[in-house]
Length: 193
Image 1 (tube, rainbow, N blue to C red):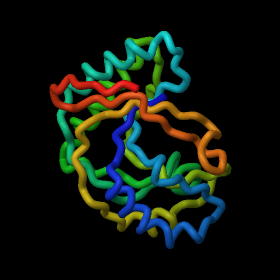
Image 2: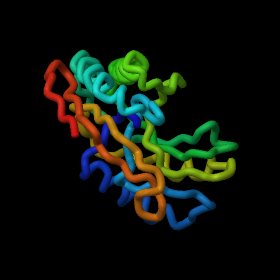
Image 3: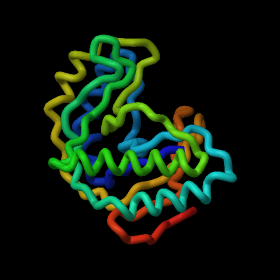
C-alpha cells in the first residue's frame, strides 16, 4: 500500500502524448503506463488487515491538516543518479508550495507509522516514475530529452490510499486499486472502499 497524489486524466494524457514518440528508443527501459502515474507521499509495503481501519482514520486526519496544492509535472531526473539510473522520472513543480507538499508526505508517513502500517523513511522527493531498468544505465541522454517537458497544472485536492496487486495488471504489471481518498484542507469526508 502507498499514499499518493493522483494526476487527473488530462494531465496524464498530456504527459503520455509527450512520451509516446520518445519511448520507442527504448534502451531497455520498462515504461510505466498512465494508469500507474502518481506522486508517492508514503510507501507502506504489505499492510496487515488489522491496521487498515486505523490507517484510514489517521490519513483522514493528516489530510485535513493540509491544504490543496497546485502541481505541475515538470523536468526529469534519475534514481539513484543519472550515471547509474534504475529509475527515470518526471519532476513535480509545486508552485512554490514545496514545504506544504513535504508536510503532506510527513503526515502520511506518520499516519502509517502510528497505525502500525509501517512505512519507508527515506527522503521525500516528489516525482512521477516514467521508466525502470533492471540494471543501472547511463540516463543523461534521457534526462536531456525529457527535461523540457512542462505539463498542465492541476490542483491536488485529495490524497489516495492505494493498494498494489503485483503481477495482476496488463503484461504482469501491478494493478492499482484506490482503497480510500482523503480531502485536503479540513474537509473530513473520506471515501473508503
